[in-house]
Length: 580
Image (cartoon, rainbow, N blue to C red; front, side):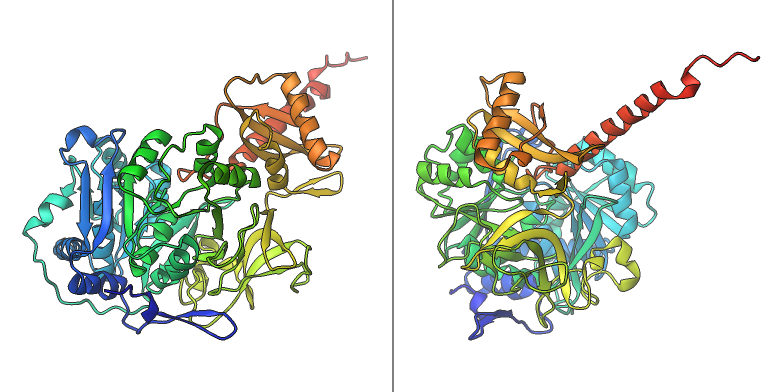
């Protein structure tokens, strides 16, 4: 059969893309079940379990290929199983399933019931879990069958009265019902549950630079928004195999591991690992003939800096990246090694692709790409007007009818809950991303930085990404993060936190070399006044560098030093004067 995407979108004469679907649209029924009925043997999911996974020794099967017929049947059985256990429309279910193949049919089962899935990373601690369970009224949890993780989740659930059921997959766990074995006796048919496309289907927590994580809710049109993600950016192929490097606990999994790819006819590669090994990942890519690939910049940096590409990209026709800005040097070196461009993409948990290197457009290394035809984002200044060419401003999105974007009244959290959602980012006309960029004369966007990350030193505004883009070009630098450190005279000074490549020493000579290297490539005031050397940078599980964590450490250290200095100079620390 032909891919289904053409049934759901149209392109206007001005180039704008419009996505539409019937009011009763439900991805599980109207895409997965339909493909299963018309092309039952079409490959949907290729799953391979790495030996680093804790469940590896507990299971005999480390590889599975699931067709759409398999997913349709398993998701229906799982939906019937959940219904038997009291899970229904509107109920919220927390998923901590890593990359286990059961995630895909469990998620589809929840869609079929009209329930709301909350994918999350297994790295959450006790307080993180309790916060999410209470804040979103979680009714049940599905957890990968690792006893230590299940114990942590059960302890958190015991403090939340709303959590009524605990399920596991992959292995038996004490106190949990095992879904993947217990669904075997469940019916393979079910009556369609009435749902509407505006009904919520997914809930994510997205971390900002301050405060607790914010709630982002997506409705039933969200999967269709990822048509442009897969079709215009990933460039997936009908009958191909797409690998996005992402844990299912992050929104990037929805970008690259299910919705748009299946709509465009491509199967999904799920490489299930706990410990990243570039060599093993490349072996998997070669063995299963991955045709399109997406990974965060940190993966590409590792490939390029260590020259570990081998034949892993032999069948890859298109490579993409997202999560954070990628340095031009990495793009250029990757092309020298593979002949492939790395096509950048930009978006947020609240959206699908906003800006990217879209098919048909010439790639400009270092650029974010061009505005997506679905959203048509703009760059505006403080006056709310679109900036001129070359002038930085904030990336914003104008409201459009029929376009899904979380945190809009009626789609995300109601206005009364605005403090816990991202809805405060909306004003009367625009959604504010908080990201700064400028556009060139051909309409390409160029990333400057987060509004919260910008460094103001001695009156200069400095983009951390610009300094990082220079530092990463030095042969000694494996990775780096640039932040601002409080300074009494200058307000802030530039600090570089650096991971050196093997064979280089973190000494004063190296610090001087790095400072002079930056000065030779850009303005003197952008050179780091402080250089700190570390073995690794703090990152999210998806590989994004956590600048906020570095800043918080620096602020804490600066505050402690200030308090110590105040104590040493305080009159109370001196000998009390004698009475006269």
